[in-house]
Amino acid sequence: MEWSDLRIFLAIARAGTLGAAARRIGQTQPTMGRRLRALEAAVGHTLFQRTSDGFVLTDEGAAVLRHAERMDEESLALERALAGQGGQLEGSLRVSSSDWFGLHMLTPILHEFTRLHPGVTVELLTEARLLSLSRREADLVFRIRPFDEPEVVQRKLTRIDYALYGAAGSRRPKAGDGTGCALVTMDAAFGGMPDVAWLRRMLPNARTAFRSNNRDVQAAMAASGAGLAVLPRPIGDASDRLRIVDLGEPPPGRDVWIGYHQDLRRLARLRALVDLTIERFSQSQTPAPLQG
Figure (cartoon, rainbow, N blue to C red):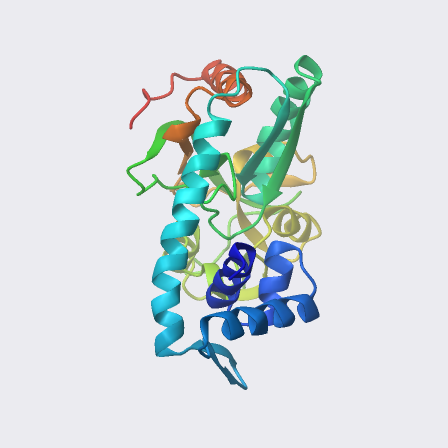
């Protein structure tokens, strides 16, 4: 048995298809299939049922999965422990945040950090998926809710105010229920966001003209006159094409939490970025103390 084949098996089990697993670990699909067949030959069992919907674990595959996951956890723990000993300001850091927060709030800080520490390469991942700190999918994560994992060191970094915006010249809807008003809002996958619920409550009869999970796209559509949009104030206030529309009650704001795995406490480059980030945000307010 080749240990590297277990990594491929684990990726397929988690992704459900060869294609998705190949993209996740940077292999070609034919290579993934060939290594999986080699592993099945080595253990003497079929580990997956091939179906039209993807790969489904057999009973033998489920047994292998339990051991493969423990091996993966130990390997990642070793990697984190070794990384956490790094005392030099060189190497790489992977940072995860939402797209708008990364662009408008983090980019200036990351630019300053890379100028101060040219030996460090920063990779910023902006996607909706919550990346795992324990699997080192990211070293530092910014989220709008606290972390559930007990091994994460976290703090509330800041609170972001939101407001309702329209194109320059927009006014409060004449009908209090939003009749005749168009909205630009989140897509269906993010229908549970607080600002979406606020819009439904404040303007129940308004029609939805446009949906997007990208706040900058929403801002551009609102500025073009497509409808009213709830936006983070760092985006809306910075545009001279948008103006706040006051309904008498502001939309709910959101907290921003910062977190990293406790095994990386002593990683100098991570600490330097965390300290710089906290310093820049604390210029306007005092963050909460570290937890975990």
